Image (cartoon, rainbow, N blue to C red; front, side, top):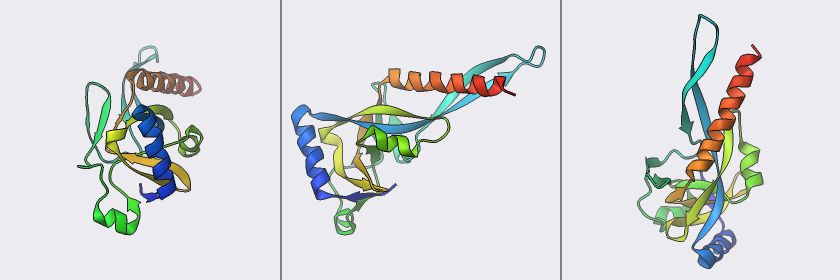
Length: 162
């Protein structure tokens, strides 16, 4: 994912971050349901799930407090990023829920993310949509559990339709 830096958008995000110290953005997460079939009666139990984060390839750590940490070492732009006016590394988020919804696929769910001022890299456009890049974001466990619950219901419906 590559963010085209926009100075006006970056200033707007910096202003919003300065007010509270954080902003709420949006991330698309993919839930992959794992299940087992019992041959005796055909009943099914969901054994677990895997959470994937499309467009978040640079995650290297998820902490106990819900922080998703990228492999980007600094929030400051690198010289080559300034020259190219783009940001590749870091965690990309959407600034508007409606934009995140446009790229959502099957078994992908929107979750709000908390993004802090000290982790901000830049803002601009990704595929024409308002986006920003951070070195770290926070996703509340209840939002992940809600997405998992929705994915489980969908998987059950699809299985029962067979």
